[in-house]
Amino acid sequence: MRAVPATPLASLHHSWLDRAPALGVLGLVLACSGRPAPPVATAPAPVAPGELRTPAAFDGIAERAARSQALFVEASRVLTHARCVNCHPPDEMPRQGDGHALHDPPVLRGEADRGIPALGCTTCHQDRNIELARVPGAPDWRLAPLKMAWLDRSPAAICGQLKDPARNGGRTLRQIRDHLAHDVLVGWAWQPGAGRAPAPGTQAELGALVQAWIDTGAVCPEEAKR
Amino acid sequence: MINLTVNGVAREVDADDDMPLLWVLRDLLGLTGTKYGCGEALCGACTVHLDGRAVRACVTPMRRAAGRAVTTIEGLSPTGEHPLQRAWVELGVPQCGFCQAGQIMTAAALLAENPRPTEDDIDHSLAGNLCRCGTYLRIRAAVRKAAGS
Image 1 (tube, rainbow over the protein chains, first blue to last red):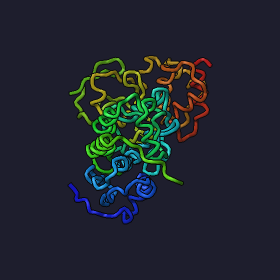
Image 2 (cartoon, rainbow over the protein chains, first blue to last red; image 1 turned 180 degrees about the vertical axis):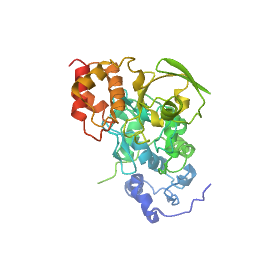
Image 3 (cartoon, helix red, strand yellow; image 1 turned 60 degrees about the vertical axis):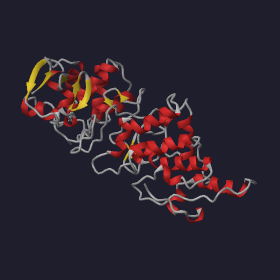
Image 4 (spheres, helix red, strand yellow; image 1 turned 45 degrees about the vertical axis):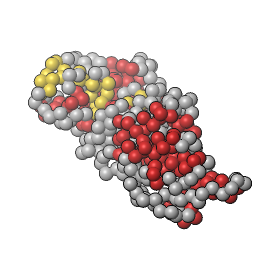
């Protein structure tokens, strides 16, 4: 377990600030609540781009809601990663690559999110990666339904979708956690094959972050000011 | 040994689970109508049917084909009289011909699911089948002819 240094919020690592609209909310709480000042919050330590912070790294954030928001922002480093959002498009075509290029060949979503007649997802994709051909694969390869589109959406927007049964497949928060922590297709994001960059951390670490987010009230981060 | 049915005939092949179906068809069974194009599921030349659905044989491992029914261009019609084959001949679709088996197998899978496709349906479903000769307009016309439209 990583040590959590007692670092003032103002000295947060820039990359963390860039990815943490929740911290803006925390600052607002600290400055404008009109209540007695809460204990000084401490920021989690920086991590390498390929790693995820553990829930314990957020223990220094005293205010529960702010901690919950920060936990989700950390989890959103996975949820907004190319390995995830490329198959959560807001339109009819999946994406590929770290730059979210349109899928080539130009396939379409189809009525069941599994492609169209004679050009389904499993016309090419198998139940595992085909390394020599660089074709990614996992069981039940498919697109996320349109109402679960994440591509180009903020952590705040994705959080709202995850909590909304009308847009999360009718799942409870616990079912959301189980899906993210154990689903084999989700797990492909950490075993993408063929030189693709995996999602940060591990699937188990994502599950732990999501569980901690739920345990702290499942508070969504505020939408970042643009 | 892996058992499967190819063009209606039960076959037993000595192949590894990871061996691509394409090489079993071409090298072990001598069915060379199915072509090797890109080897990465990007061109469609190797398209065959697995239980009636189009798959790219170049990336389909034998473990997926085991116990299932494979149809190749040789088995689409025993007499070459499939409506698509007739339309292909009548409209003189092929130029060099290398991609045409894959084009026809994809079109046949489309018509099996959607017997009256629109032009957009045809374009979308055959979007993964490349033709270096550029016979796309004749391919689309032949699919429409085979569909009776």
